Length: 148
Image (cartoon, rainbow, N blue to C red; front, top):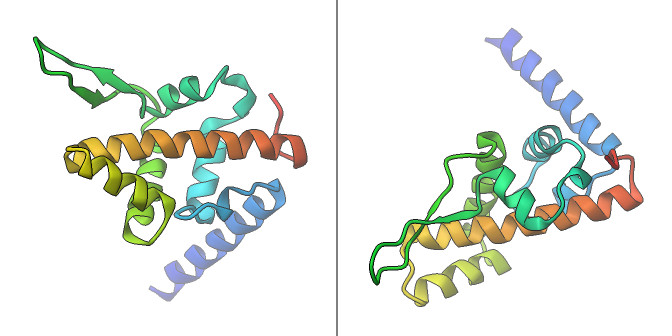
């Protein structure tokens, strides 16, 4: 068991060093630690390959898909997209709603507007994908992240 703990500690240290060396500011965002930042950086690759925030959101699988019928307007989360990126945004969203953050305020605003928990989470994850995209674009201008 100690051997496994030691390997985990070494892997975590290596991962943290790699994230720090990348120059990313993703870890400054609430809910993103070294592991989540590394997952986002690896899965998204060069962020400049996405033509817009909407394209990035679609790639992450957080762009809503309309599933309306008759007078009922509904959206659901896309099952397409990168599930690992979607998971990273979900972790970030959960961390945001547990603390007093702008994400929690946004989530509560959506619930007050009549959205269910799932619908409010979908909206929050879409909003957070925009924040992550803008942060990564800004990072490419000032750091060692690949520009595309």
